[in-house]
Length: 164
Length: 361
Image (cartoon, rainbow over all chains, first blue to last red; front, side):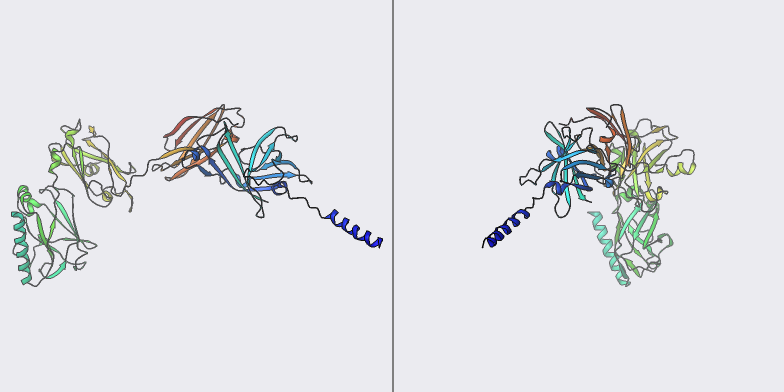
């Protein structure tokens, strides 16, 4: 009888220990190598004042067909370095360190942000990218770089990316 | 009233007379026009008739039987005279060249007072005839007192049709005592030229205006014939010209006639994109509705000690390009403005301006 009881409880303990699966973090979705499918430039001042044109597609200009952005993580899915490859305009520094504003996708309308840093300690912020479309099963991501002066945005660059 | 009565009587008479002879009615003349477009009655003119609307054959020998203002071939209905014989121009167009005062043996004043030019076209034997028709006449006497430097007929010329331009030299200083006046001109803003080359006799003659007396002149031409270097199908937007006295002893102002085919394009529009920039941005130059011949924009952008230059090409609808300020000005610290100069391929300055750069938060 005692042996039977021990076997039953022992069996229950074994099932609890092995069933935990941590939730998927945003880092798992965002990290990797991304190439450009489209780059749009929005004139926020013109748009706010109803002036046309207020958008231009510039992905076919310069060498944006060679654009590639790598967001590296370590084996714990923690962010390490980033780099931009391709002979393209230096809209933001082409290399450094990165992290996200949140580990998990937010349910609020505020997009997650990719912070770009000059140093591994992440004290020197270089630029901020808004993740306006989070990668899903289609492996597409949209990030926006916004120029702001006096608190008012005047240009938004919208990068449509696809993972390699 | 008297004129109308006369016409009616003649039309009834004409109808009765020829119905007795059992003529074949060939139909109505399609179109009638003249060259020169306007003319005095003592001036040679050619009338053109489009008979494609009639049952005349393409090889028909066609004659005119005209009874107003007079009837030169009276009594010869069944055997028209050679002087009434039209010229077959092909494509169902026939022409008849005459000097009205001579053909009708009348003074210009009498012709002007008549009922006008009323006629039928017919075969020589009078077995076929068109409906009664009229060659309309465009008087231009009002120009002599209108105080206008020029007047054209039609007001908007076409490439393949006749054009008459009247010129009142009394309104242009320096044209007194001119022995001749000449037409120095081109199509589409001087793209196709017929200059007044005073040292070439045949050009002197070709460009010479008809002297109407008292300082008034007339130029007659058909653009696709006169500008013989213009290719077939040329799209004529305008005729630009000036009048020249003698051997360039005086000139009128530059003048222009816009063609009937000409649809004025919307004005050219240039803008920078975006409207506000920092030195870390991409900077666009856009120009739409460009003038004919403008197909490139050259830019020079100076920021600090750095100068960026380049060229963008395009066409009439748009010339557009983007400059990478972010990379080009990366060695300039904290610029607060740039100087931008944009010119077109014809050397015109499109923009020369200082643009204040936004400071990023």
